[in-house]
Length: 384
Ligand SMILES: Cc1ncc(COP(=O)(O)O)c(C=O)c1O
Image: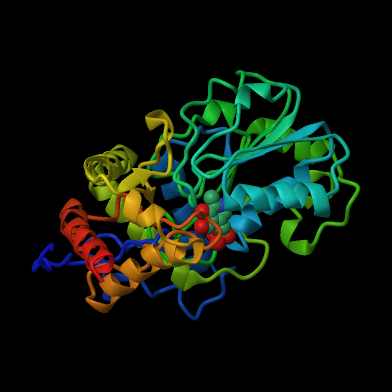
């Protein structure tokens, strides 16, 4: 029987979104000058523009790309890209977990795209992306948050391809390098890798995407929240901080604070290194634990953010399907009760699993302290 560990993580925050705040975060450090002011005032617009400029700088977004703050978090930004740009050419939607499957449903049931290729794969796998014609617009999820599978590279996107590449990068930016030259519309939300307050989505557009928006009007109606055009032209003010509707300036301040922290520790490279080192602790432990298996078989496709793991072995396999679902649920509940680890049960639509967030705002020591507790909880369940 494994003894109950004594050391607890200092910050037991392992949720895959909203994720942990950065080390040292405090609400008292939020700037408040813009709060209670109009988002169209000089001070409001300046803070929104600063959030855009810092995002651009930290992510290494090319100068001729546009970066905007959108309503509706990542979903809002991604669906805005789909609704405003798709339909002009044949399209592919490629998915390998729950969120990508939502974008498939959008394309099939909502937009009813006539010339559509759907490429999907089970949790833990990535479909054969080389099947995507270079003339097709493609929508994909860079890093599948609910399966832990990421694309290994962008070799399947040819430089200068005719179709647009629409990239849901919400659990990858600030943890993995984006290949901007091949990406036309990239989206993410603040509560993921930066651990900021949820509210807004970011939309990063290439010149090719701008050209599509200015030369094409989709057949379907566009709600105001998706309207990026003023007359025939892109409304560039949106990408300077003049958001479509009223943003949360409090959430904006929180995002700025996280960006400033990331800059102070060395920018995105430091964030990548932190996520890599964190994920290594968890993936090495999975390899060394006989009753655990990484949900993703191919090491090149394993994420460094939301690492997902499933159970295996005689005891687990002897359980009914219902009892198997109970294993990660009970482990997560036991550790929650001891204030050792919060919110790390696998996603509700994924196979029974644990999912431990390893992004750059998490500390290595906290992960090292969490893992023996999982061993203890598992052994406790097994010996019940
Ligand atoms: C890959 C991916 N896409 C989309 C979403 C939805 O994001 P939001 O809640 O910011 O709209 C999530 C949220 O976890 C996600 O992980």
